[in-house]
Length: 117
Image 1 (tube, rainbow, N blue to C red):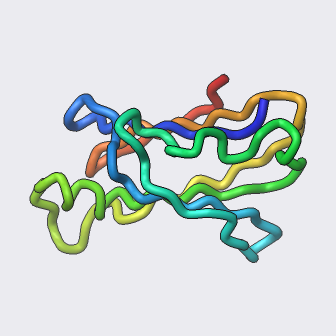
Image 2 (image 1 turned 180 degrees about the horizontal axis):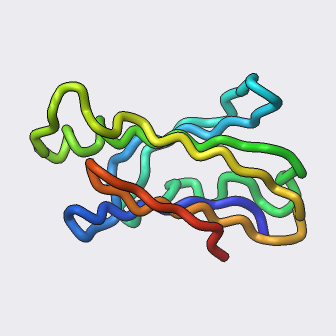
């Protein structure tokens, strides 16, 4: 139960260690920063869940992943402007009694996500 995320670097076949991520709550066009963090060696939030089962609320959220910053730090030569800079995922939580896992699989040129468990 709760909310979590995980990022895999599909270019290198590794977790996206060191990527900067920000979590927001959203209401219409307005977004409020909840927390920012750096992914650990497993490509996850070092503090564990973003929200545990008692803190997660029905509503809309946004995760913003600093993709260009991560790949530049890994020494990948990116064009200017970058194809992907930040990946922003807007999603909704309808059932707080369920786990919402938001993984990101990313390269400098593509990404995919899904609702995991």
